[in-house]
Length: 518
Image (cartoon, rainbow, N blue to C red; front, side, top):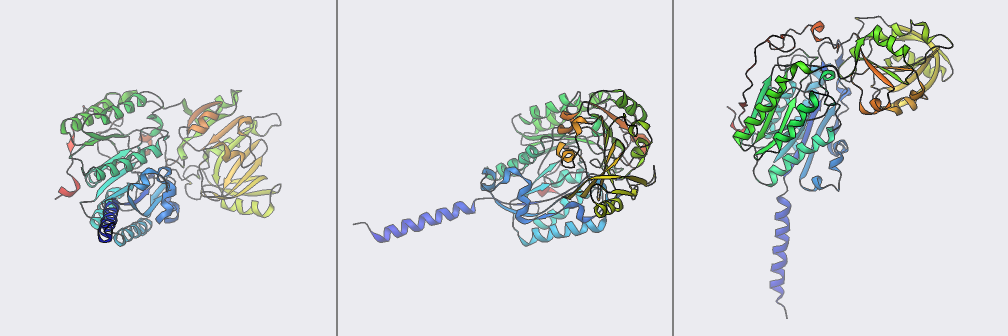
C-alpha cells in the first residue's frame, strides 16, 4: 500500500513547481503614442484624434497577440494606453500631457515589469517640445525604472534622437514604404523583447547610433524602387550577422522643423565589431546613393498632371494631390486643387470626362446633405476652415448621391455630384486608400476617367487599381518642395539643402545602456 503522506508530499511539490513555472513568465507592459505632425500646417491635433485604447482592447491592434497566439502565452501582458492618430498638425500640449499622464498613472498602478513594448511612430510634434517621443520614454523610465527592458517599434519616417536611443534597449522600424510590413515590424519588436527576457541576456551590450544628414520625403524614398529597394535589402543582411539582434534605417520626417529631423541608422547586439560595422555600412550606403533618390512616380505641376489625365484613355487615371496629403500631416482641407478642377469645362460638358475628388472636409455641407437626403440639392461652403493660405472656402453646389455614417475618421461622408464630378465631402478629414472607400459610397472608381486624391505615393490597393498615375506638386502643409517650406531649425549642413557639403562623419556612436545613464 502506498504511503499517503509521501503522495501528499509529491503532490505539494508538483503544485509548487507549477507555481514556480508560472512566476517565470516575464511581465511586460504595452504603451505608446503615434502620429506624424507637420509643423508647416496650421492645424492642431487634439486628444480625441488619437482614439486611445486602454487595457485589453489594445490587443486588437496586434494580430499576433490574439488570445491563443504563441507570443501572448509567453508573457504576462499589461496593456496600459496606446493612442494612434491620423497624421496631422502639431499636438496641443494639453492633449499630450493628458495622454501621457494617463499612461504613467496606469504604468505605476500595475508595476513591477520585466519589459515594456513601446509602440510609437516617431514623428510627433508637440507645442513647446522638440522631442516628444524622447520626453515620453524618459518619463516612462522615471516610473518603471532603468532595469526594465524596453523594445521600441517605429515607422521608418520617424526620428530617432539620441535621448530616444538611450532609453530604448531594443529598437526597430519598418523596412518597407509603403508600409506593408508594419505588423511584421511590431511583431519583431515584441519577439526580440520576449526572447531577450526568456534567454536571460537582457539588455544588448551595444547600441550603435549613426546620424545621417539627409532629409528627404517619403515620396522620394520608396522601397518599391531603386535606390531605396537595394538600400533596405541590406538591413536583414546586417541583422543576420552573429551577435546582431536588429538593425534599422530611419528616413526621418521631412515636414517638421526640429533639430532631430534627419535620417538615422542603428544596429544593436552583443558583438561590438558586428554592431558598429553593420551600422556604419548601412549609413555609408545611404550616403553614397543620396543623389539617386527620385520621386517614386512621374511628378508634374498640377496643370501638367491634369493635361496628362485629360489626354489619357486609361481608367482610372489617378492624380496624387500631394501638398495637402492627410496621411503625411496635411490639414486635409486645402481647397486649391478642387477649386481649380471645377473651373475646367471638361467636367461640366455632357460628353466630358468623369471625375472623383477625395476628399474635402465640409461639416456645414454634410449637415445640409443629411437634412435634404439622397437626391436632394445642397449648396454650402467646404474646406479652408483650418488651412486657407492657398484658397478660401469653396461654395459647392450639387446633388447629394450618397450619405454614409459611422466612419471612424470622417464620421459622416457625403457625395455631391457637380455635373460630371463626384466630390466626397466629409464631416472630418479622412484618407481614401481602399476601393471599398469609394464603392461603399456608390462610386465606380474602375469606370471613372480621373480620380484626384489627397495622397502621396499610392498605397498598394490604389496602386493595383490605377490605370495610370501622376503625382502633382500642389500646395499645402506637406509641400514636396521642401526648400519652399523654409526649414530654419534643422541641423545644417543637410542634404539636399546643402548639395555640395563635405562627406559627414558616419562613424558609429555607441549609446550607453539605459541602466548606465548618468
